[in-house]
Length: 163
Image (cartoon, rainbow, N blue to C red; front, side, top):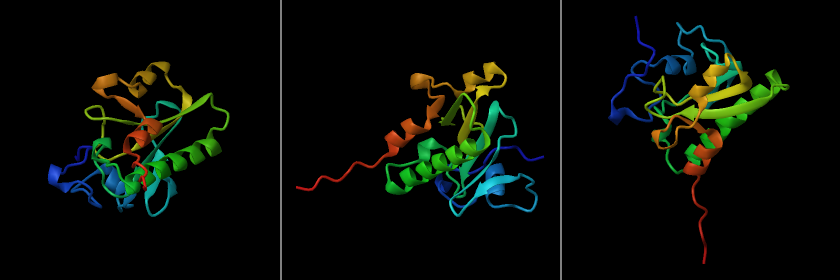
């Protein structure tokens, strides 16, 4: 039985497909993947989390294999990708959970990520059960969960200053 993680060495970052990765199978629509997609385009796919922690809990993943938030760089390309992921997640939750008490968007940071393929958690609260909110709490210098807006600030390219 395959383990639900991505297996690649550090030299294999930013490749279209990992040797085997459950999320790469979903993104690539592998023949064995039974995951129903809520959204897809040439950059990302979205689907329901198999172990939901909230009233609605979706994941938005890039098609390109990017292991974790630590592999994102301060570039327009990465900033646009994460912005697009957030927009897709917001659109889905606005459609499917317009009356939820709050929407939350963010990423687990190593070592707290369960799959080494970048994935945005899109949560329409309340948490179900309520104790699951612990998994989606920032842990300061320890990492934990990072809000999507904070990640976007971290990877936003600086505007060029012209003299």
